[in-house]
Amino acid sequence: MSPKTLVCVVGARPNFMKMAPIIKQLQAVNHLIKPYLVHTGQHYDQAMKDTFFQQLGIPEPDKDLGVGSGTHAVQTANIMLRFEPVLDEVAPFAVLVVGDVNSTIACGLVAVKKNIPLIHVEAGLRSYDREMPEEINRILTDQLSDLLFTTERAAADNLLKEGINQQRICFAGNVMIDSLLANCRQASTLSYTLQKYGCRQAISEKNYALLTLHRPSNVDEPETLARLIHIVGETSKKLPVIFPVHPRTQHKITEAGLLSALPEDRVIMLPPVGYLEMLGLMQSARLVLTDSGGLQEETTALGVPCVTLRENTERPITVTEGTNTIVGTDAVKIVQCVDDILSSGGKSGRIPEYWDGQAASRIVDEIVRRYISVS
Image (cartoon, rainbow, N blue to C red; front, side, top):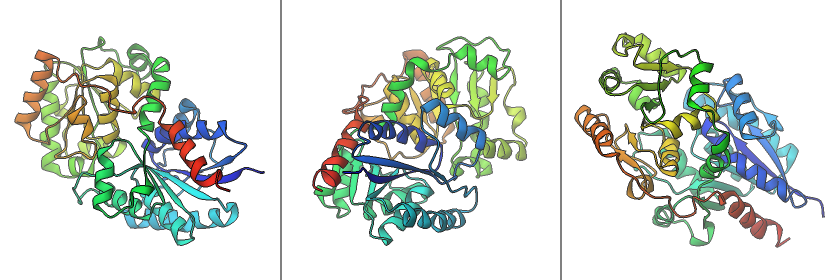
């Protein structure tokens, strides 16, 4: 029996870490399933894409759609237009999507319109904030999906409330943590990363804060951005801040004239860094300030205190069991949380169930059981 083709879709940076362990497990059953990797090009920084594929051991995509940037509507439409011919050519038994980016919903819609089963990894996460584009993508992708893999048990409750049949839901664990655990030993050291980007400041491990900031609700609102940047400047007086800056965030900070609020000797602004560099920066940080969902999970797995600069999270287990504290953009709450971490060490947390590095194995085993073994 020749292997059946499974189309696997990546689009934006977080997808790479989720797909890497799945591709590796699929390669172990290549006599049954042939993965066909599609990169939509939603993440359009060629150098960064190449770095992530290399560092995570992901093979070069079989197809790069090259859609680039655009509004949500333009980007989603272009992905759909370019993805449909791929399905016609490849004729897969299913399409596997991860996460909640525009590529996820766009490719999912095309698949189900062509009566091809859709598999969603990281299903059932909800922030209950419909102003987040990702929340819309999550809800709609889950409704379309034939098989839904969850990262935490509470996610199944969300899906059941939305009318999704229990038989379509499978608790597999967190593939992001598969990648993290597989790469911890290879993570770049703090000194290597600082030297690579020409940083001359003397910064020691566990004596700095790591900051990421990219969500439109934080960087596109001038008042909110100004408040956060000034808080970062004040925080840097207590310990240095390392800030890998998203290009769009860099533009917004510069446009708003806020660079002067970030002392050069205390806030180290880096360009976007590769996965192994970011992993090393997280491991060595005293605390992390972020509006990223993925970093909330990774800091919980690493036991590093996380201060989330959002009003909500679609990953509540990082708060109830992990190291994460939600503070929003309120200056008082942020300062209090940072001070608490500096004085007491912050939340220690514990590793959630099935965040054990074996999620991808469970996912592939279930795909084989449902779609291959019955053939």
